[in-house]
Amino acid sequence: MTTEVSEQITVAAPAERVYAAVSDVRRMARWSPECFAVWVLGRRPDGLPRSFVGWNRRAGYIWFTTCQVAVAKPGSEFAFDVTSFGQPISRWGYRLTPEGEGTTVTEYWQDRRGRAGMVLGRIFTGKVAHDRPAANRGNMAKTLARLKKELEAG
Image 1 (cartoon, rainbow, N blue to C red):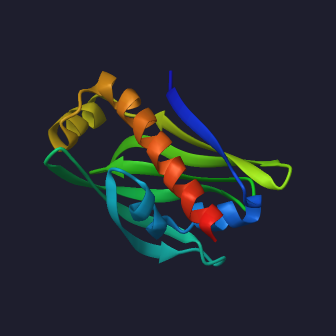
Image 2: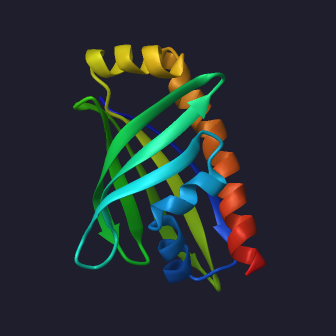
C-alpha cells in the first residue's frame, strides 16, 4: 500500500501561472525547507525538465536524489518520481484546481520505498521510515506558504 501525504493552499494566481512555477523545478530551492539546489539533467521537447537531481539537507545531513518527470499536464498537475541509487523512493507532485480567480494547490508525496529505500533514507537523512510522512507534511506547509507569497507578490 502506498502512503500519500498532502497539504493544500489557495493562491491568488491562475492555474497556468502556478503550473509554470512548480514545473520550473529549480525554484524549489527557494521554497522548500530541505531542498537547497536542483540540477536539471535533461529537457523534454516542451522545455520542461525530463530529469533532474535534487540536493537536500536536514539537521546536518546532506543527500541527493535523482528525479524523473512523471506527470506534466499544464494547468492541472506536475509530478516527478524520486529514486536514490536506483531504488524507488517517492513521487512528489502538485495538483492544481482553479478556484474563482485563484488556484488551490495540493502538494502531495507518495512513499514508494521498499526495504532498500528505507535503509538509504535512514543513512542519508537520519529519519526513520515512520517519521518521514510527518516531516514531509510540515515541510509541504512551509513550501506552499512560500510559493503563495512569491506568486502573490508578483
